[in-house]
Amino acid sequence: MDTALRYMAFTGLALLTLGTTAAQAQGKAEGLRFLVSPGVGFGTSGVHAYGKGDSKPGGYLIARAGLARNGRTFVVAEGEFQLSGAPYPADPADPRPPTEIPKTSFTAISALVGVALYPAADFYLMPQVGIQARNWQGEEAPTGSESGFAAGLIAGYHLSFGEGFSMQPELVLRYADVTGPGSPSFRGIGFRLMATWMF
Image (tube, rainbow, N blue to C red; front, side):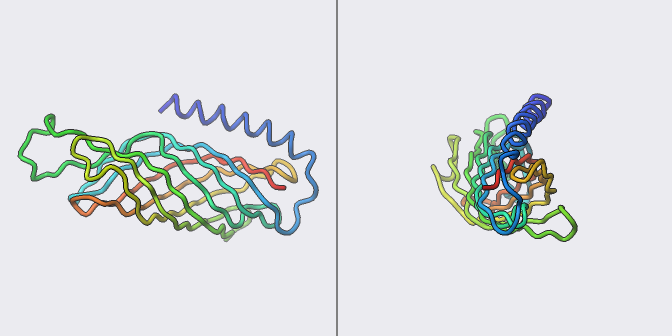
């Protein structure tokens, strides 16, 4: 975890430096503007099945594009790539010892759209809907690849560093339907740092 936090801090500092420099050339932020926003994240995710959950910490890469309104994130579409495998709980009815049950997990790419709502100053909530595509690993994986409905909720804060650049620390909750035994669903929580350029 220490390595991941250091990576996020270094990446955030680099994005802040580049963004602040680029923002000096931007005009006054008014009305609607196009935005692009890369980011990095760290959190824990996994599958809830058979009435229990299993999770694993790991990193994320995020790319976002959309519209900003009055210099703040407004409507966006984003892609999120999960770098580490999300574990799938073992069937408690399996008679084999836990050490003999093959591990099953998946990596995922999520594509979602969302609208940022600002209930107070620069603090925002962003509900999201979309799909999650998964690639399974493991000898007893329920399938090779599949996809399902995904939803999320982001709580973030807009930090402006110029007319055309801002950063957003975000807390993210994620849910997705999963195909497999035990009525599974994907659940995740994580922290992100986004860097946003507006044009």
